Amino acid sequence: MPTKYPQSFKDRATRLVLDRLEDEDAPSRYVVIRETAPKLSIATETLRRWVEQAEVDTGKKSGVPTDAQEQIRKLKRENAELRRANEILKTASGFFRSGTRPPHDEMIAYIDMFRDRFGVESICRVLGATDRGFITSRGYRAAKARPASDRSRRDAALIPVIKELHQANYGVYGVRKIWHAMRRAGWEVGRDQVARLMRLAGLSGVVRGRKPHTTIAAKVPDQRPDLVNRDFGVTAPNRLWVADITYVRTTSGFCYTAFVTDAFSRKIVGWSTRTTMRTDALPLEALEHALLSAKDQALDGLVHHSDRGSQYVSIRYTEHLAKAGLTASVGTAGDAYDNALAETVNGLYKTELIYARPAWPSATEVEFETMNWVHWWNTTRLHEALNYQTPTEVEASYHMTQAQALSPV
Image 1 (cartoon, rainbow, N blue to C red):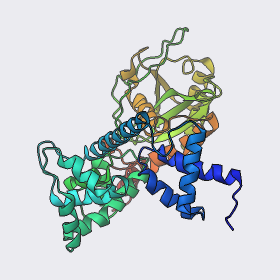
Image 2: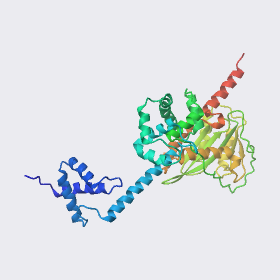
Image 3: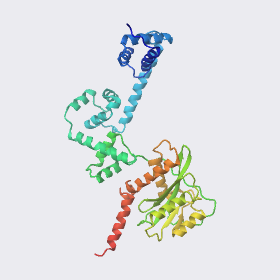
Image 4: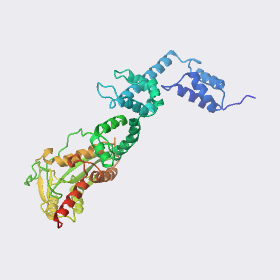
C-alpha cells in the first residue's frame, strides 16, 4: 500500500529542492532531486512528481524552467565565478612580486592555503590566465605527489608561528616587528624570509592613515611657556611626561581617553576613559594614575607637557601639577607637532585598537579593552623608536645601568 504523506511534509520537501535550485552554484535539477530524496527517505521519482506539481500550482512551467529563469541562473553563476576570481586575485596580490614569476614552492604553499576556499582548478585557472606562468592544476598534483622539500617543511613549521605572533599582537605587526619578535623568541630567520612567509599567510601590518586631531584652545589666557619646543629627547625616566585626550565613537555616544606618557621609555604611565571630558573625571584621573605609578620614584624636575586644551589649563589641574611638584609646559594652540609624541600615542591607539573594530557598544567596553591595550603597549609591544624593545625593558635597563654605576667596583 503506498505511503500517504502529509501535505506539510510534501511542501517542505519541494521547498528544499526549489530553494536549492535558486542557489548560484546549484547543480542540475535532476541532481538536486536525486540528492535530496534519500535524505528525506522518499523515492526520487516521488519527489520529482511533487516538485512538478508544486511548479504547476505556482504557475511555473511544469518540469522545465522558463528562459528568463535559466538566464538569471546563468548570470548568477557567471557573477559567482567573477566574484571568486576577484577574491583569488585579491588574496594573491600580496603573493606576487611585480614582473616576476613566484617560486615553485610559494605557488604550492599558496594553493595549499586556499584550496579549500577556492578549489585547485579555480586557483590555477584564474592565476594561470595572468602573465605570471602560474602552475597548472596537474603540475600542482604532481608536485604534491613528490616528497616535500626542506624549504617547504620549514615554511610549514614557521607560518603557524608567524600567524600566532601576528594575532597575539593585535594583528598590527608588519615584517620588521614580526622579524624582531621571532628572533627574540629564538627563531633564526631572515627578514626577507619573514616577508615571504607573511605574503604566503596573507598577513600585513597596519599603517596610520589619519591626521591627528588637535585640541581646541581654552578661552582663558594661559601664560605657561613651552619648555619642550618639539624636543622630546630625554635621557632618563620621569623627566618629561606628555598628556593628551582623544575621542572614541560608540554606538551609545562618544567617550574620551586621556593618556600620560613618559617621553624616555614611551611608557603610558597613566590613562583614563570616561564619557565626559571634565577635568576631574578624565585628565585628572589619568594624571593621578601616573603619579600613583611613580609613587616610589623621584619626580624632581619633571615637566608635564600638554596642549592648551581647556582641561589642561584649568585651575584645578594646574593646582594638582603644582602640588605634585611638576612643572607645566604647553605647546602652541592648534599645532599638533608641539605635542607630537602624545599625538603619536593617540594615533596608534586609534589605529591598533579602536579602528580595528567596526563599532564599539559602550564606553565600558572601550575602557576594558584600553586597559588591555595599555598593558600590551607597555610590556609586549616592540617600539621602533626604542630599537624594538618594550617600554618596560627600556626602563629596567636604565635602572640596572644606574645601579651598576653606583655599586662599588
